Image (tube, rainbow, N blue to C red; front, side, top):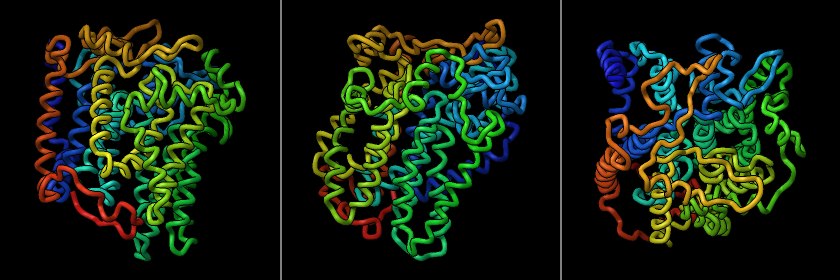
Length: 532
């Protein structure tokens, strides 16, 4: 019964035309003819993200509630839904999200689409859930799909199509980027923007007229993460140095700086209007006493590098990236290899500087684990840029890397199916294994186990929904337990077969064990290029 309303709404929307979507469809069809592999990668990743929805939680509710407030009330005040989240700050007797404004602003178009598609749903609770779901897949899900496409295009400059495709898909689906993209979160958007800036700068040096435009766009993308996560300020320096080094003449790098400066106006304006000063943020007036105490430690929560935190971010049982996605470990010797080769030295050093810089910054932060999360959300840029190092090792250690990808994919599907937001690690004592925690629930068929409301009005009202707050699409089809994952398996197998055919046509034949690409050690201006 409750599923008929959204179906009717979708049919109504299709019948009404929605001209922009028709135009987008024509654009996608044209892109499919030009770049079938990229489209296949994007559809595979987007479909996997759209299969899951994590429902409510403080982090995602804070973003979504702000987006709703912006559209419905033209304000960022969350007084009416303050019970939805603890990620709040006090401002002049009101409460607002303590987070940077960028994610909520970017989600506005997606929310408008979601609101249109749910107009015919009379149950307010169901309408809120489906609206949050559509907003999620059109922000975080779409961002991860685009990230995989950008990564494929970047890696394709130095690797054969098959290897580049495997790494792009693994980065999206075999790392904590996947579970964190099945809810409204800033981190997939941050990763997409940062990688796009890096990819724009990794172009052959030229004096063509569009070089200034490319540098300007690279600057915009480099600064966008700062509008969503303040900690990402650490990536602006290496990207700026890379932009200066790549620009010829060097004064052309001013276009990069212009892009950074224009985007920086967004958070500065938000801070001024909401908190009264360009450099004042919500973290200076936190509502949650525990968060406020952590923020007061050291300098805004940074109390110095901790080797204990560094261990738990890499190999630890609760948040260790090398445990959750073992193939990422190949990035360490991969960065060394890139640094030792003259043609790839700058490319590798900048990627390593971003990955290691983010990891060390998070290891210096009191709230390093990012609360309830798969991996540490704050350090997902480490995952994104580690793929550059892994790619350097791929031609020589393909079997071991593929094995690590398989393990990572298995862990991430299990974790995403159970919940992308497992409990935070304890402050003291032994650290539990998140893999064991996930497996215990997965084996029992306890999927979508975290059921938390999305928007909670005054008095605790949630609209009395008939839909679950968190779900996978198989569950909405009525499939029980582990059987609910069957549609995902069929979709994944089908898209994999399609991608295999596309790759065969792109490269002539699927290489069983390709030798290193001639451009692996070459700089961006000398790589062998190819279309996927």
